[in-house]
Length: 353
Ligand SMILES: Nc1ncnc2c1ncn2[C@@H]1O[C@H](COP(=O)(O)OP(=O)(O)O)[C@@H](O)[C@H]1O
Ligand SMILES: [Mg+2]
Image 1 (cartoon, rainbow, N blue to C red):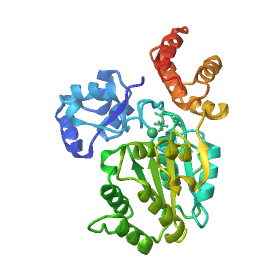
Image 2 (cartoon, helix red, strand yellow):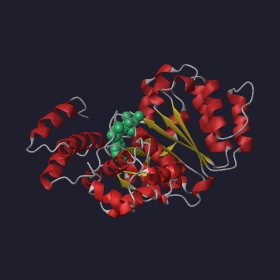
Image 3 (cartoon, protein in one colour):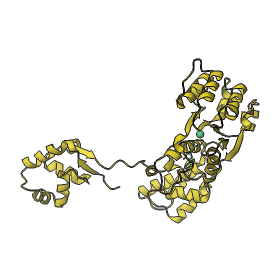
Image 4 (tube, helix red, strand yellow):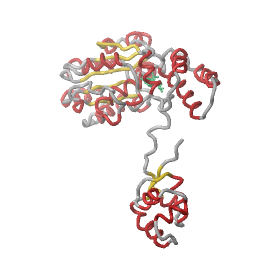
């Protein structure tokens, strides 16, 4: 790994200049010659321009300066130690790959009036939360924070949209009062006291001025474990969305099972689970989507490794991520041969989808 460049901070400029004047070196060239460096390197150092870290250290020491104290790191740390993320949902759009078809369909329901509801169905670790987060963020993410060519113009006026992400696994979202209060807070609407269903409905139907999307993650948890989030509750949300929000409110929910099956299997009958204009079923990525993810490696992979990763992962995003992470690790460590594959397979064995 190349060593990072450093430069003196503006605050340290005088101190460094004085140290040079105090030193026995009559000129920058003399100092450079003594250290066996190019004169330009010494000049850069003294003028606050970036210098390779080792040179920075040597010059500082010659001038009897504490190099760590005067160093100001210029090159920001790499945005992430590895582009391959496993274990938690993808939160930054530039690390999210694929799902083009699902995005097209879902944004197609959200970019017209009235907004319509969608459901995302997929097994554990298929990428549901990552997709909800992506929907929430992609339209307003500055181009500089996206991959080149990554599509973000899904909505006609993205700045008018309000998004609320609700993780129903979070105990703070599992009672009516706290869940409804949270939604109102996110929408910057006044939270009534008491914050019950009636007041919530009044508040939203009177005040909702912008297109608003409520993303409900892990809705199965709510149905299985939250007695307060009962049929009456879901029925009211349905009614709010369909009748009282003037077409400005939509729900996108994520669940492991189809919403109607889920409602039935948990003893619910609410028609809320019947309002989805589109259900995205998250399976594996297409092979070109998986290839794009693989190609995001900072060190390129050989074609036979790429094929192997596609084959072993069956293009499931989590498995692609894990295999890429292991391949990158082995390349960074200068390993030769295919031993990494055995270990990588062992890693994904427990995650087979
Ligand atoms: N679209 C995607 N692009 C890149 N990686 C993804 C994507 N979707 C899922 N992943 C990978 O899968 C893992 C699980 O995703 P997550 O959204 O937490 O799944 P779920 O919510 O369905 O359990 C993430 O940590 C990430 O490694
Ligand atoms: Mg999830």
